[in-house]
Amino acid sequence: MIHSFEIKNFYSFAKKASVSFEVNNKAPNNNGYMNTVFGNRVSKIETIIGANASGKTNLLKVLPFIRWFICESFNLNPDMPLLVKPFMFGDYKNLPIELSVEFELNNEIYKYILKLNQDKIIFEELKLRNKTKERLTYKSLFKREWNEKTNKYTFSGKNYGLQKSFENTLRTNASVISVGVRFNHKLSTEIRNYWIKMNTNVDEAGWIGDSVMPNQFALFGEAFNFLKNNQEIRTKLEKLLTKFDIGLEELEFKEVVNQMGTYLDVQGVHQYKGSKVNLRFEYESSGTKQMILLLRKILVVLNYGGIAVIDEMDSSLHPEMVLGLVDLFIDEETNPTHAQLIFSTHSLLVLNKLDKYQIIFTEKSDEGITETWRLDEIEDVRSDDNFYAKYIAGAYGGIPKIN
Image (cartoon, rainbow, N blue to C red; front, side, top):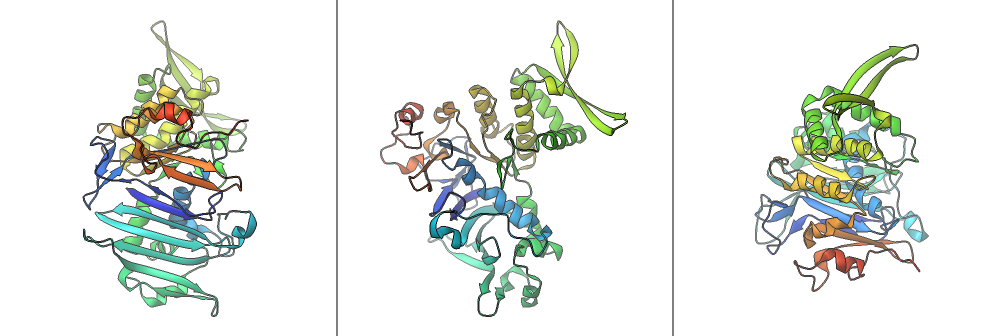
């Protein structure tokens, strides 16, 4: 599970910002939270609320970037730049990007720290949180730092089970963990397997469901091929589509061969006067299409564990359906793996569904810098407040400025 993450000089986040899933003992005792190995609790859900262009998507980019960096950066050509950008205005563009994340794996809590720019990794460290209640301390497992004088890394990895000679294999654009996986290093592989379970609809360019982006056919093709070959997830998806009263009961897949080659014909099965009627998928509603794309990602996380990072979760969906998706993570029956969800939405009904520890706001300053805060960080916010009404009234910030 994710405990927290921090960013600085990352896209619109010029200044340091943090997101925490950890809560104090005042948080409600309900299924929206889970216990950690240290005895405290972590939220299963965090939602991000804010005006358009306030930085919600940029905040969601953090975890998918870390996932990519840990799991896949080794696949980059050694001469390619890193797929990340700093705040592009003023002097910030010449400063390094700083990221860190705390996550729990195998009853241990790790802190992963990065400092980098588009050209190279400047600093990388993995630390293990010590199991002491008196104070928060860490043991460094590995650390590397770029030396400008020698144009090489200084590297220490004794506590990680890597020999000093390992530094000769390090690249300026690949994580230590991604390299360690190639050496069949046990902990590197376990960490990689943890992060690979993240499912998201966000990449470096933003929300990959955006209709102006040229990947819609590929997006549906990937989802359909996955569902065709994974009957367990497909059955759960069809059951939920029926529960949400979308009108579609099941999906049928058929491989068709013509002069152009082989393609997958997908049809939705509907009920009409007691009989089943098929409808080609392209004629389904935008809401049905969006729900299938979301459930393909969400159900994998619920089934196998991990975290879902979802941007624009309300796109083409009724607000009640957004609440239904959130409920999947709260309900122990549908979330036996204690999967987590972090998502952005403009569907404000969710404000009265969640606790003040599960609501994050974003707002952009006059200089174009995004700031973020969790609702419980605002003084005098009561747990029984009408969060929706007070947000609309401007009590919490994070609302559009329309003159």
